Length: 184
Image 1: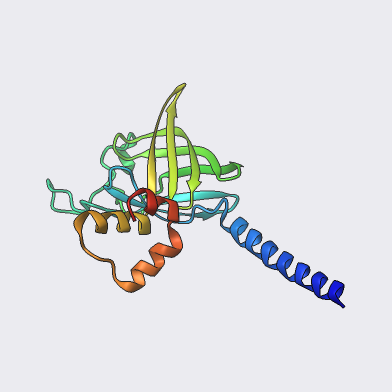
Image 2: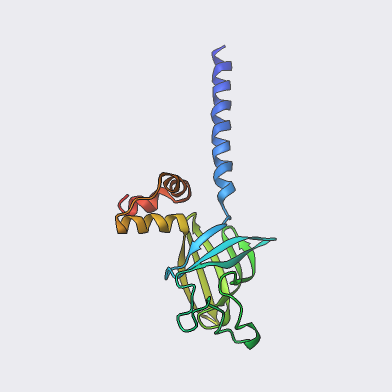
């Protein structure tokens, strides 16, 4: 009888461990969400597009062009016929396909100079996305933070508190290590 109880307990523990591993694996290779650029001047909505990912501008710190008083447009685009496209809703990732777990490769549009670059996007942690653009062998990269994590850091710096419902989203979205490293 003890053997049967031990066996049942072992099976139950194994089922719990397996469920935890599967739940953790479900979040792997999933960069979906709203990401704050390293400069903090834009938020990009990243989502699935078939076998790859898409990234579109969802928010701008300065959505109105101070010179025209109108919404920002893609005025630096190399193609004159595209210079009137609104910045919000602009697609930045082009042909981003999965090349490895948590890594995509394709091209990225840089609205700051109107050019397109070879690019890789790497999900380094649930709250951290590395975005790299290259011209030949010269590459530059920046780290984007998932918006809930960026909100938490900003609230800590400013001393303001997040609402209870937003705090719950932040706790579910952001890695505990980030907050303990930031003094949380």
